[in-house]
Image (cartoon, rainbow, N blue to C red):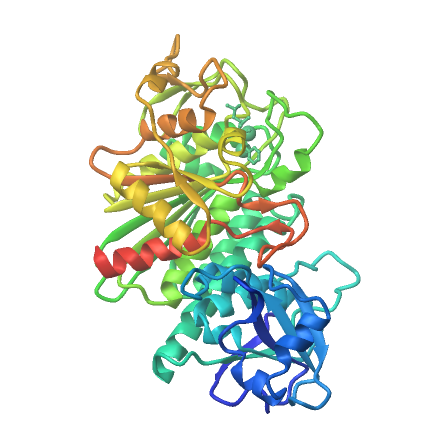
Length: 498
Ligand code: BES
Ligand code: MN
Ligand code: ZN
């Protein structure tokens, strides 16, 4: 996909040449109403814009797209009115309403050369993010590449703030949106092309282009250093596992942050094999790794005053004569032993190795994210991530996630679940003997490997990282890029507040 060219403009949106000018509509208390930012366009229509939109059935409901020919009233050929939904009692709309409406508009603008957005007058950053993300498509493997995203979008500057601040917002929001599309690209790349070695190579290339320090541990290095979890899970595949470390050291680096992401390039379940139906979606089981790789690169692009290290253990979980089996006892990195009772609970095994290694560097914060459990979908649904970990930090991560429009909810790590992981032969088992609270059990397992005193959070994105339905807002089919925007928000918050 080629991303649209983006710019901030002070010019009058009614007299700028373009294929389309985008205005917002809302479902006000008295029905359809125009959103802020549409004043100049409405004036060019002699105040009749609302009437015209009403005449063709516009309601202002979220993501509704209605197109009017401009009939020479404005320089753009059409007015594209996109619904923001219901405003708050004081008439304002949220950032997420603007992000979603901008995404819907971007989808409708596919193939056009040039557009002007007035949604940016409401919330600039969200308008930019929604435009880039809604216009995303993954066509690498399509013969017909389709229309492609809109070529160029000019964003009308909001009234408040100065041009320097607006340019900074353009830069930050574009970089954040690109980190999301990078993650989507990784997730959407099929498992025959994205396997541990090729994933590691692509990640390293991305990081090196940004001048970052990269280390890739191959199978031999993993064996030498004792990464028993990663080696066991990767052992059934003809494609050997890897572990990638990418470090960014910012200017006057303050806090040290470790990001850990699950990189299972395909999860068949292994010997505890999954049913055939829906197994194809396990191409997305490396979404956590993709997110942390894209995030450390983003931290460098935005020069956060932090030290950020991304750890991405990568393996393919396959059944074969060399695969690990239920009953095996693994010696993990750092020496703890784990009895494998189900080879489909593989994510926690590669993650524990990476978490122990990450903790050796004594980070101030450790954030791990993974498509870890089907139980996440059972408890919170397809779109809401489960956040666990150190209580205060867990709550902060979940709240920051919601603030940037990535639904997230804090979940507990009940003490009694540790007992269910007792093993007959090893320090602990990789699953409990029951299916209750599976997302929490996985979190309790991971906690065993977090070093004493390290503040940490675990974000289970099993549902939210992949979207199998039709597009909505700025969420397109396939990889969503969740939780990159949450991670970016957490890094920015730590940079600002410690
Ligand atoms: N990758 C899966 C979890 C998953 C399921 C992600 C659905 C996305 C959508 C994970 O490795 C897994 O198989 N988990 C098992 C754990 C169980 C064996 C304790 C699960 O959730 O069934
Ligand atoms: Mn699995
Ligand atoms: Zn998995």
